[in-house]
Length: 328
Length: 258
Image 1 (spheres, chains in turn cyan, purple):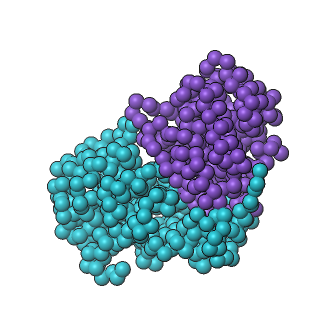
Image 2 (cartoon, chains in turn brown, cyan):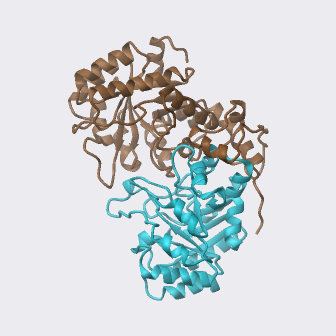
Image 3 (tube, chains in turn blue, yellow):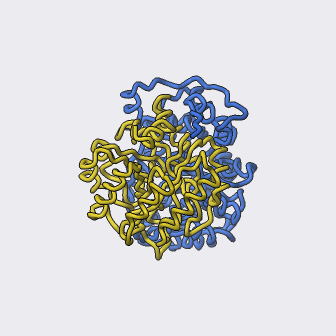
């Protein structure tokens, strides 16, 4: 059988033009492995051939041109004793994959059903990480709506008076996303122009207690039409997760945190429009690679890619960033 | 680039871009793949396994004689599976088979597995075992199929030094993860594909666990976007020789039994 070897040089030509420029050797999780294996720093960066056996592949120049803003990142999963160290490792990995900015939430160790103290600790860790990001990371404040007053205090501390630009809800109370305690919190987010990211999943194996689906989130969104709400993971079982969002113009589909199953992005774009679909990786638990593939491998117009990869997120964050004096 | 994990025909629960063999071949070629090991989605639920394998062999001949390498299905819980195996080897001249224990209702500690593997060894067939086809959390509600536990292979493989085995779709399984990967790699001629390996720098971690000589490129296209596995190799930041081994050499070697 005919075999045409794809050398690493060709491979890098198709995928990595920017990594060497950024001086990236490897992500820290496997830095030790690579150092044992004798891996040196960045490789020379050949110019991608205009036409070759691999011309259908993703090249680094394409990724960088898209100005990718990853809307769903975690510190957990990265090595590092401090939030700053973890952020440095995240940045190295992001550089390798052409990610420009990252939205980060939850602490170095996930603590769900978090006490107010844990909530504050995790938010402190995120703010510390953001400080070490050279302006490339943005923080969302973790909210446990079991403690509404503490959440409101955290919003004031982290968003109004701090650097954070959004809120993140997980599944910390037996109440779901449509429950009344969330209303005061989400309304306050709206006052500050902060975006709201809410975890959703539709699990055949059964959701956890307090784990919402896009259906419950849609109810919340209906009550707060002026607040930007991002449907985390879009339920993961996306054929069921996308339809509840169709008629809610303030809700965006987050592509992160599920297998790179063919068809997800295509359906989201078809049903919601490319301007309501957002790239996110859920890095920590997932890889940038598998989640980037959801956009780079999707059969969607090329013109849809910039919107999904970053423009949509920048658009919804622009008001709060401008209010904080941050230029995009 | 050799892709050790693609499937022809229709996934039972949705249409996929690339589920027509001609499209699959064209798309994979465009992405730089030079050879693809093809199983059949029909193998999951069809009971006429001989028919499944005949259609697979025919499609591979028709749409990619120098490109698609058919990996036939076997269901050792069905009558006269030995004849299906013989046809894979002798009639269709397949170099390997792909097993789906979880879809066919057996576990790897079932005595029939040892018999099957011994027979594949005598036919010099490469065996792929698909540990999962879909995240259990997102499966169709009336069709829940848990992933395959590879632990019984630890003992089986030690007793079969000539067996060549590739575990495809190992790794991240939602609520489960594949355990024993490192131990399995030490027991025998076992390889792992990267389609469902997940997390930061996942391929580099797999290499650390099992060595770069035991990792093969598998995309699980068209169920997954092809770019996922491709970008995972990129994200791993491995040296040139290891990238080359994963993308091509390891698969070529295991296929010819080197």
